[in-house]
Image (tube, rainbow, N blue to C red; front, side):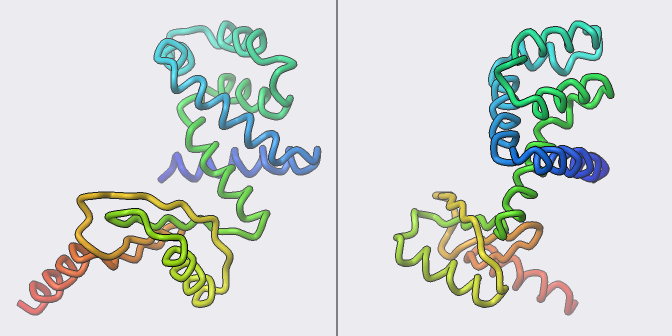
Length: 180
């Protein structure tokens, strides 16, 4: 939880800087690319996260690799994380930045999980109903979880609505055990 709060602070500061330079989308995209590039290569990840590697060496490597190729705000964010020994927060900062980006566009994250892909009409109906109930617009991510037995699981930010059969059984069990 503390890491999430700290990552949110960093993401908010980076988002404000990017907003001032009218580069919110570019900075967000480049932070995601930098994060993915580091995390997809095990030796790069080990180098970036290693407490043994000198911070100056990490900084010079980042500058050599990304100077002129990444927006200055994105590059300086990476350098700041190295200077403050917060490299491990990068993935969470990118996630929080994405949340801020969606909020700036007037959207909230919505993840719908089902056993099989929903047809476009079904998905639209569920999303439209949620938008009406909550008075919000959503950026939808659909996930398929084949072992889910019927129904849907919906995640809206930190709110979870479990309409699956398994979720209903768990709710029934909690109710029954609470009475005893």
